[in-house]
Amino acid sequence: MPIHEKSLIRPENLETHDNLVIDGVDVSGHWSTFIKTRVVSDYNETLQEEISALPGGEEIHRCWQCGSCTNACTVNEVNPDFNPRYWIYLIRMGMESELLRDKDIIWQCVSCNKCTYACPRDVFPEGVMKATAHWLERKGHTPKSPSTHFDEVFTEQVLKTGKIEESRTMRRFFARTKQKLLQPWMIEMVKQMINGLPVGMLTRMGLATLIAPRTSDWSKASAAMQEYIDEQHEKQEQALSLAELVETAKNDVAA
Amino acid sequence: MTTKDKYKKVAYYPGCALEGSGHSYNRSTKAVGKALGLDLVEVKNWNCCGAMEVKNVDPKLQTYLSSRVMSVAANEMDMDVVMAPCNGCYHNLKKAEYDLKNDSESVAVVDRLSKKAGHKTYESGQVETIHALDWIKDTIGEEGLAARVKNSLSGLKIANYYGCMYTRPRHIFPEKDKGPGSESTSKPHFMDDLLAAAGAENVDFPLKTACCGGAHTLSDSDISTKLVLNILKTAKLAGADVIATECPTCHSGLEMHQIRAEKTLGEKVDIKILYFTQLLGMALGLKAKKVGVHENISDSIKFLKAKGLG
Ligand code: SF4
Ligand code: SF4
Image 1 (cartoon, protein in one colour):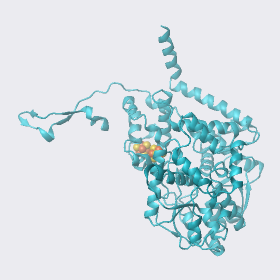
Image 2: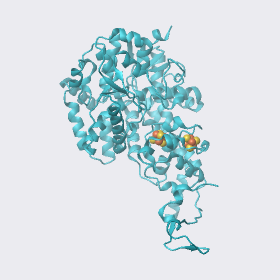
Image 3: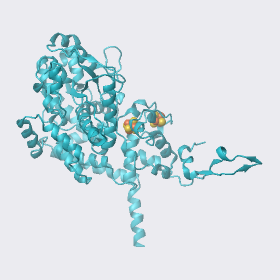
Image 4: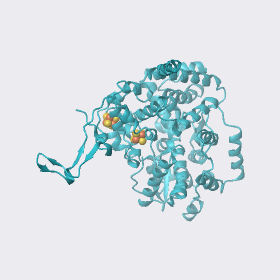
């Protein structure tokens, strides 16, 4: 018998009576709060398969629900709603609408792998978190998270030049996420950084932003990787039935 | 050849961060190597290992990027050990090694990409990847280091911070947790051992392998600031004046969010953040500038002078 845990004790599922008499017994006050009965009918039966089709989600079926991942989790300590074990449960049960309630925080996993270290079943919960965050984005439930933007900006630069020049990656990331680069704490940081640096060092840093470091003879590697990324993307779209979705939508519009 | 001899000349993979924000780690690693008579030969025309980002676009792409670095070291330079001081690089090379040994799909993807890119495919076992900590510990060791100390670190109270990627996930580090003499993934101690040999007093620091939120340092700064603040405060409470680091991402994360915590939360924690190679270098008699203390964001020069270092 599945335990529908948290979802059962949300305020909208509770019923409170000021005066309640059951079978002639007055149960007003403390004993007057009941959890409403509820029927879940909107299971997404392919949810687990979709998540396991994305990189990192492959081993989700191995989960035993022991809770070691959540217990060890860095983000859970800061935000108790961040609960990898619970999300794995919802995915395996196909309870998509419940999962969607937490859609805006799943991407916050910091990839510390404490969960992976603790998991007795080699589920690789860190990977499952990434797969789930990507699933949410690919299905259009959430916009691309800042983290995904950063990953993309970063990977584009590696593909282009073979190496990362940090300040450029940073500027592109801030531009793409439409944030102001010069936040007060950054200005303070740059001030402290420049303080005490010799002129030669500053020139070197300046040059690095102009002439980005590159790996030479990189174009063939770059092309091969881009081809591989596109291929994988295509496969995943199919697994998520996204092409079908788009097709159906088009037909609907046409009709 | 004993481990000692084998690590005396290694292929050096600094990685992208050590050419940018982590330049003082690069400088101090080279300076310490020189002072100890160890030979670093930089990997020719290296590329990014994929850091923490590429795997989120596709994990096998990261495996390929890391494998190319090992392929150059093995096939173009004839080296059998790669030393990476950055935890991210070290982690990714280890991960690639593990995947290429155990996962045939990864082998196929790496082979295909290597052929198209026009270089030899790296085969698992061709090189051994080590961290800067292994490098010093296994060549010079605590006794050797103690014998070479010119400026003892005595009087320095240090919290050793190893972060996530040096020990997790444990399956990619088969040489760890092998009993006495090996590194522990739950309570790492190699950095403690080396700094103690240089005279420092290591405090009992419970957050050695806590996460600084480095993966989201820019994309989710509030969480990173909270995590870093916790690390700084705990180190301070444990009695430390210095946090020793061994990873450029952790190091910059601690420095950046130390400032951000002060600016956005009004929480100032007065603790110095230094690379372990900077501390060792000064113990070996090098000047603060030689180990790049001036290149760190936070200013430790006065503090070190007061302790008779640098
Ligand atoms: S630690 Fe592993 S087995 Fe246990 S709940 Fe988490 S993912 Fe499932
Ligand atoms: S990797 Fe993510 S889910 Fe796992 S413990 Fe760290 S923050 Fe939590």
